[in-house]
Image (cartoon, rainbow, N blue to C red):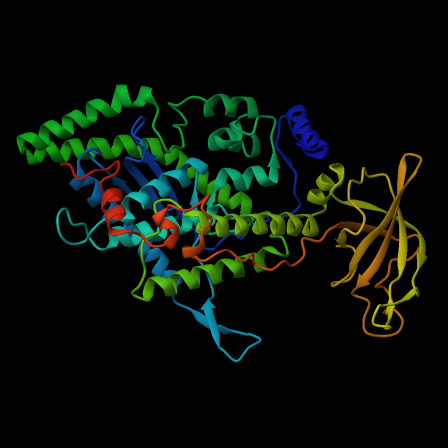
Length: 510
């Protein structure tokens, strides 16, 4: 935690109210997100118990598994949930437009992408478990399931994988969105409790933050946002309700079964409804935070990713994602995640002065006043070309830890401005950083006015993540011996592996 971030949390604790730590919301927020609140049984990893899902605060659908250990009921639940998710995804796949390309080949993409919101990172894991258990299921042969089950399994896995990529907006935990913008006086772990986090940000009318937090810690008033239920709730309420359901089902008593099912739905609805209301209150709060300028560009990349995967699913050759990544696929994925993280952190700092201040306190960016400048400096390149290379010296009090030759960008200069650190020297408590301007000066023999910082001007600089080519990885048949021996390096799903995966956790038992 940086000094700026620590200070924001201390100020929140002193004032007993959440403090903004970013000026903008750095994630795109859809006009029509799909809110999903999954619930699983405590102690039963990946076993769905219920889900509350909907596209508006006034329209929700509650799906309940009467007996999660029963295979037929589990997959009836998965099919119902799958139809809701696929209807939402299909509704997004309505408008598709051509996009400009440099080559002759025409490209198009959907103008929007789905956005699924869950209460916390545990909700993402619950959807990931559900996707893994569904995507390998067979629609024919022994124990067939409806076609929508493996289809939604593949889509859920796709959304969960994209959620690991920094800056994406297709699957988001609402607690992360809130904690990204507001600092509270509690720990990062406590911030994963939606009720507790909202108590700091927007306590209910008539309650202080302390009173709201006390209510948030009371499971009778604010049931856990999941995905697992509390053991006290399981023992006191859920287990007896399930026993009544099982007894009525075994006896074939339709009336008793209907009553038991109604009681179970009411019981689980009471667990989920408080979180449902908190989710939509949080969405309304986040809509009031202005969106960062570069968030739209990142959402366009989401649209590209969504379009590519949608086309792959429509191709007829779509296969479920591997149970485990092979060496090549894992390396490609790691490279993509690292690149996305570097780009997202740079975008946030470029757009947001609060985030930039945070990086300045870590020595990863600096701001200061220009104390010397050579705006007309010209050098001769090895190709005997005369190049504009102005130099300016910036005096800063920031603790700079950037090496010489680091490429810089500046949010306080015109677009396209690029520079490199030439040297750094101490000046008492300050630092004198000489930078050489390398881009964004126009095509003339002298810099375009305003493109080179002038003496007395205040400027901000941060490292440019830059462009780097995609690493070249070996073909599947040329994996080094240290990583060989994994049949999934072919990046396809072996039928035997798929059959084994189909019997995991949920099994083929009745």
